[in-house]
Amino acid sequence: MKVKDIMSKNLVMCDPDDNILFVSNLMNVWDVGFVLIMKNGKLYGVVTDRDLVCDMANQLSHIKSYASQKVITIDKNKDVLEALKLMKKHRIKRLVITDSEKVVGVLSLSDIFETDISSEIILDALKSIYKINRNTNKFDTDVSDFPL
Image (cartoon, rainbow, N blue to C red; front, top):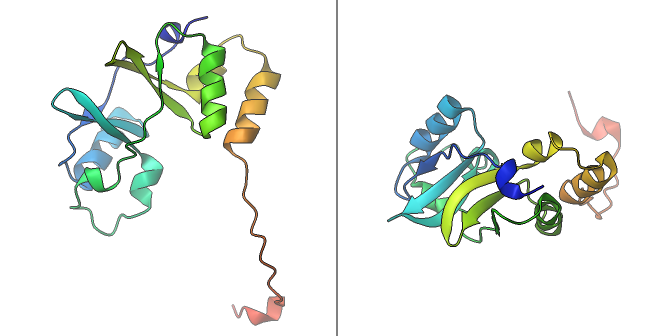
């Protein structure tokens, strides 16, 4: 199965100078958690709903302040298993899909859930993507140290 067979083709995009409030409204209207940031027809970066939650205090900031500019992409003709390996390697839930250097879609984990790929393979990827980094510092506290 190819990436192009299951990718989302309805892309939600914004400009790097759009503000957070505008982009969060885009996410709400289109019911997405991932927006492509395009500048002069080229991919500038991406922003996720999680990126926005990190700093909602300044809703007029330009979205470029929150853009992930190291965007992981995959060609639309690659196999879905290759896409899943990339997601696992980079611990990401979405990939930008390209045709040559043109952005043509987005592939998310939820798209892959709908395929016939083995649940063990998907679960293995999920474990890597959602790996919890446990706090290694030991705190010597007692429940009574935290008044209610």
